[in-house]
Amino acid sequence: MNAANELLTLLEAQLWIGFVVFLRVGATVSLLPGFGEQTVPMRIKLVIALAFTLIVAPAVSNVPPAASPGSVATLAVTEILSGALIGIGIRLFILALQTAGSIAAQSTSLSQILGGAAIEPLPAMGYVLTIGAIALAVMAGLHIKAAHLLIHSYVLLPMGFFAGGNDVADWGLMQVAHAFELAFVLAAPFVLMSVLYNLALGVINKAMPQLMVAFVGAPVITLGGLFLLFLAAPTMLTVWMSGLDQFMANPFGSTR
Image (cartoon, rainbow, N blue to C red):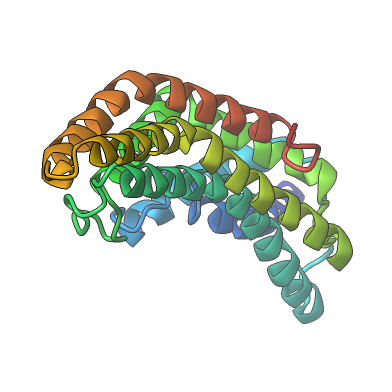
């Protein structure tokens, strides 16, 4: 009888820890690239979150306070916020890539091609880069890195505690700035090509005013943009993946 009571008590404790871990994991998975996309059904996301919980919970050394109405409310708020904070930091890399694709498409007159192919309206260039980046990240072990990050997050953000408002604001500002910096770096070749194209177009128009250079140049910039995408996409995704790996290894440190 005592053994059964001890087993029941142990089971209750493990279920309680699993529930608390699930709160953080679920918030992170809902924003995780590939796993948290809008095209993924909610039931699949729930199964993925439960699978991550089964992996993360045994490795967590923190013990949550005993279950009570006050502790449940506190843990619900802090754990969901902590998970959302981690997920937003990762999701910003996808937004950086989408921004880079939009800048590149606008620079090469490709912004109107297949603009509504995805749930979120994106130029075809941004959509291709986003799909390629998600596929590359998953193939490179995004799920393993995410599990490591979630386990390590309990060292930086213990159960029931949340970082101060000033720290979160500074961290968020740094991550957003880094996301825009990454977007501009990735789109720089297309912007440079656009500048050279318009400069050459102006020189030709000045030399031969009777020539309709706009009609001649439009196919050139379009084909040039597609060819540059073919050449630059592997390097762009490599740089993006390197930045994502650095964040996953040290999410609350410097982005440099």
